Image (cartoon, rainbow, N blue to C red; front, side):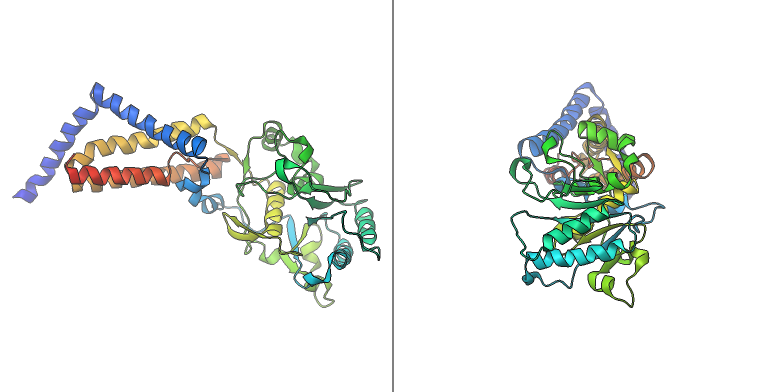
Amino acid sequence: MPQKRAPKEIATRIKSELQKATSGRGLVTLALVVLGQVAFEHYVFHSVLHVNDWDLSIIAKAYQRMATLGFRSTEPTYTSIIEVTSWDRTSGICNKREYLNRILLKVLEQHPVAVVATYTLSPEEICSNQETDRLLKTVHDGCKSIPIVFGHDLGKNYEVAAHIDISGGKCATGYTNPEDDYRRLPLVIHGEPDAGQSLSWTAASLTKPELKDKPLIRDSLRDGSPLYSSVFSTLDFHDRTITDAELFSNRDSKPATITGRVVVIGGFDGDGILNTSAGPLQGHLVHASYIESFLDRRLFRVIPECGHILISMLFWLWVDFTSLLLLPIGWRGALLALCCLTIALAALLIAAVLLIQFFGYYNDFSTVSISGLAIWLITSIRAVFHGH
């Protein structure tokens, strides 16, 4: 008999709590709770504590999977990589430049559309056997027909580190520093014109000058609004990567991997490992991924802040409203409230996927965060055990 009355009792309790929640006082309380949650997440974590959005965001944890869903292949269309694995790193900078010159000559024989070298030519290193001069001659001869881009570093306060300026013809340099958030495509540093353009954007804009007129890129260059893109993984580039040994092999130099493509040369110094949304990647692969994203227009703009706040408030409004109704019932209500929370999270994930795939918009929705859910869980447990 008690088991048969339980559903009716639960329905009665829910109806009673619904009347309380929809009263004037209840609605005001609900609105204040929702506003407090969003404000706490947005202003305390991000504006006061300076915690990165992607560290707390639940949506950010699924970013790479969401960004690569859909009909588009993740195999690079425009870009290939030459990974230097055979060079002896203890042989010195001049040997390095001589070896790079050999690689560059071999690559130019196979007619790429552009060549990118992901390191800086330091002017402080003097080579007595003219290794630097021979490399620069090859670079400038190649720049008569195709873009050749080298990197340079940015120091503190975005100061450009000393480097040999190869500018002239289609030769150029670009800064190699990525954004703090590796999902964001680097173009220029807004408000720092002396820093110049990024390595990847320099290469892409020289290869396809018309990209500058595309609305998303034009707006980002004008106001600094960020552009997101998925990061290509090592596996994505597997069939578009050759080693320096393969390049020099008479048996198989894979010209199809180079001809008609932007060729990124990297790996001389390991390039460092960057922890990206696609996992740990070497620096030259990240630059190749950015160039591919520009050329293939795999770009997502950011949802305006007002849209982010509105969606977050709707999320928490649903979660808090159902929690106010269900938590006073006890553990059964807590399970139902958890189901409502799961539905809200699923709806948010689906909305994020649809925004990316069909509208080209993305946002971390950082105000729907791991910390917010942890606070909700603690509050819910206390409510159940204290009978509130």
